[in-house]
Length: 317
Ligand code: NAP
Image (cartoon, rainbow, N blue to C red; front, side, top):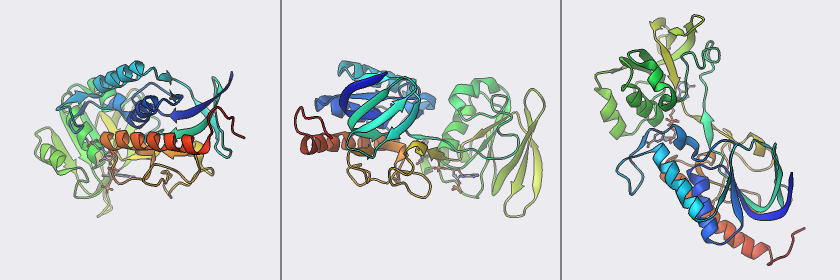
C-alpha cells in the first residue's frame, strides 16, 4: 500500500520522545502519525518503576504508557504499531519511509527510534537467550525465584534492574569492569549495602556455560590480574549500555563514531526536515524527562520548518 497523501510530520518511534513530539505536533495542528516497530512506550515497556519524572512520586512503565495512549487518543493521533521499517529515503524534500505494510511520505520526520541493549559478545550469550540469559528483568525476573543471578554492568540500568531482581532471587551478583559504579549516588546508596547483592569488581564475564536446559556457570576474568574464575549462577542479565537504532539512516544523516545521531539544540539533523530526539541522539543525559523534552523541541521546530518551507496546499518538488 502506497499512501498518496504527503504527511506533514511522521514520527518514527513511539517511546517518550516520539509521544511528546506527537502531542506538540497535534496541538500545533499538523498532520502526523507515530510509526513503531513494536507497541507504544519504547523502553518504558521494560521499566518497572519511574521515580524521577516530575509529577509522579512513583509510576510504573505500563501505567505511564497507558497515560500516553490516553493523551494521544484524546488528540486523535494515529499510532501505526508493529511496522518494520525497511528503507528510508531522506535525500529529497519529501522523505519516504517504506515498511512491510506500506510506503509513507512526509515533509518532515522525527527519528525517535531509541536504542537496544548492548550484548556482551561472549560465548554462550546467544545460545542461552531465553534459557538463563535475559535483557529484561521486568519481563523475566519472576522465572528466577530463589535463584542466584548475575548482572553485568555498573550503570543506572544495571543497578535498577539488580534491585528489581532481588524481589525474586536469593542473591544478585553484579560483575562490573571497574571498582566504582557509574550509577547515580542515590542508586549506589541503595545497592552497596543491600543484603542480597554482592559485587565482583574489576571483572568481566568471559563465557556463559550451561546444560541443554539452563545456564549453570559463568567464567569471570579479573581485568587487573587476568585471573579467570568459574562461578555458579542460574541467570545472566547484561546491562552494559545500549546501541542506537540508526542502521537505516547511516550514510544519509550525520552520526557520531558510535552511531548516535548528531543534532543541534533544536533537534535538527544535518538534513533539512529531519529531526532526532531521545536516546537515539548524541546527548550527555539519557532520561525519560530528556526524551520528552527533545520530542517537544523537535516538533516545535518542525512546525516552524513546515511554515517556512512549504506554502499552504502546495505539493513540494
Ligand atoms: P551506561 O550508563 O552507559 O552504563 C553502562 C555500564 O556498563 C557501565 O558501568 C559500563 O562500564 C559497563 N559496560 C559498558 N560496556 C561494557 C562491556 N563491553 N563489558 C562490561 N561492562 C561494560 O548504560 P545504562 O546503565 O544502560 O544507562 C543508559 C542511560 O540511561 C544512562 O544515561 C543512564 O543514566 C540512563 N538510565 C537512567 C535511569 C534512572 O535515572 N532511573 C535508569 C536506567 C538508565 P563503565 O562504568 O566502566 O563505563
